[in-house]
Length: 213
Image 1: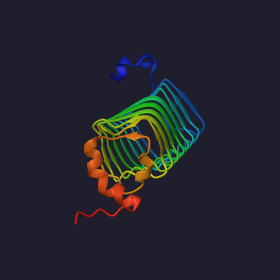
Image 2 (image 1 turned 60 degrees about the vertical axis):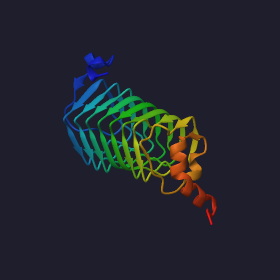
Image 3 (image 1 turned 120 degrees about the vertical axis):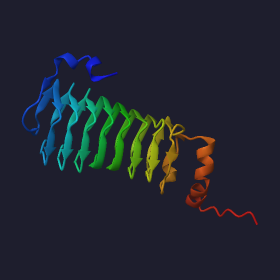
Image 4 (image 1 turned 180 degrees about the horizontal axis):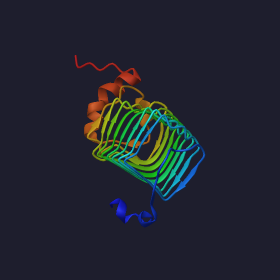
């Protein structure tokens, strides 16, 4: 579904100027803008769209993103800790060096996004879909994941140590590379092929020595 088909698309107004701390933004379109070093902690974005936007070295701690559309946007070295994301769509974006620990993500779809060095420790994810995404060095340590899936996504050096999972489906992942924290997969569903691939790591984590002779 393109942005034009969103129920609030006809209400969007172009944004000008910087982002401000604790400001509320309703039906605003951020298009082709660059926010470098922005201090906008506590800001709220309701039915907003971000297209072709670059956010770097910014601070948006405890910001709220409700019913947002992000397309072809780049978020780098940004503090999004304790932020709230709900009913959003993220398309073709890049998220690198992001601190999003203790955040809440509900009913989100991420499609063809790249996430690298993203800290989601102690976050809560519910009804989140990572579709055809690349997750590299993403940390879900201590996070709570419910109804989360990864169809077509590549998980490289992703950590789930101490995570709590319920109805998490990893079967569709094109790659599942976990350096540690295998016990955090309790409650997840994986395929038989993934089990075979991960078997040596499971054995090592359990302290099981495997020998054929």
